[in-house]
Image (cartoon, rainbow, N blue to C red):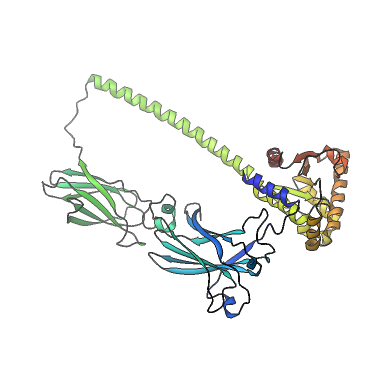
Length: 484
């Protein structure tokens, strides 16, 4: 199931009400020192976590640097003590090239009213953070708050996680690995000329000092060593080192000196090969001249063809860049809805779907109550209709008393305001329908098949109608065409 489909499925289900709580969020922040609950005595404390897991997730800090973060997931025990649970504290201790210890506290935004979520599933949460360094061990422990009292068992969960080294395909692009030469490719070539060994390699932009070590074999002692000082970075360098005539099984190590790692930077190895020497002057006869001319002509043709292909690719790349830039412009969507629809479980979830899955800027009256009070509902709605790319009439083919009761407690008299705004928007639509202007802006969205028996005004039948989730692909396509 795609992300859009899963979001809309939860939207349709939540609009019908739920058996207990079906959504609850957390707010996490760093906490230094012990939890404040340790200072109090608690008559009831929550059970231990049911499960704790962690994995590395790739992140791109900047355009060039990439690295990992720790994604920590946990699930709660199905226990009545969940009603006294207020927070979960997670601590991470790292060991390796350096040691570090820090903790976060994740507070639950609401009290738990039920032991499970919708569908009798366990409550599950996750937190993504804690930057990862190469070649480190991470001990992750977590426990629920309020904690156990003094002299009582203090349940907690712990796991171990190991980060990869700088040879990892992602970690090598991190800042720490780049600074110790993870992307440096010296391309070492080694060959012997009589009593000398010629070493060729490409220098790095990170340092100007290198040590070259020659060994007879992996187990032998170092037979020669020299320092190379150069101020030319990322250029090909050649060095000749005197050796004995019997040295035929040599290996070479290039040891760089970079500011980040000093004398402990990763080494690069090369093996001895045969040197290619000139065997004298080659005489070119008439046949050779013809071959030379043919090769020169082929080279010219190849250069011309390559230039044409590169020019076309550059133009195609520019066109694709501007096309992607145009597609990334957000679509402004004004959402209006009747009072029968539950604002918390339907309108807000639908707005979240438009923002995350359709890359849209969503306009809802509930979010701009201050401006509506200053401008008046008629002037505010007329202005929003002009700046919006699409105006969506959100309708529902059923109501739910339980959902309405929840909405009434949390929103109050907002139903009357939504009915007023829906009526004003409908009047604007009727005015545009008479003048045949701006009709392309209006869309009618429902969560079930739309038919003539629906409760919305019949004049809206002239709008483009979509049934979610059946028409999700057509809806997203038409919505994205607003800027075209």
